[in-house]
Image (cartoon, rainbow, N blue to C red; front, side, top):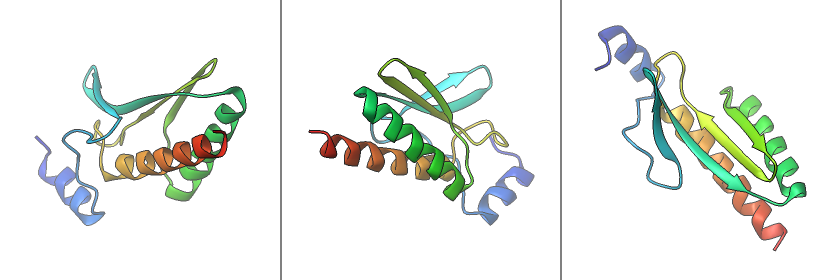
Amino acid sequence: MISGIKRTLLESVGDLPIKSPKDNWEMLEKGETKHIERTFELQPDEVKMLVCDIIDAQEHLNHQVRIVIDGNRVTIQSTTHEFGEPTGRDREIARYIDTSYDEIRRTYK
């Protein structure tokens, strides 16, 4: 349950917590913090392109994600730290990342 102060702040920025993702992103919980996560499998050149796009998205959307690169696998974790759970901001950056991934995959097919 979100406290009155948190709810007021969330509503003022139009950034309500999300219940669960409706796509390839998973809702995971670590301790008291929830986050959304997705792992992408790519070719080496695609890894670099996706990570560069994610960095651009972070700057544009003013929202940071965790990026873990393990060979050709890129795992993204996103949460709104102020609330300890994903919000609309996390969904927005996830959509941007999904679009970027789809465009990269089409380019390299």
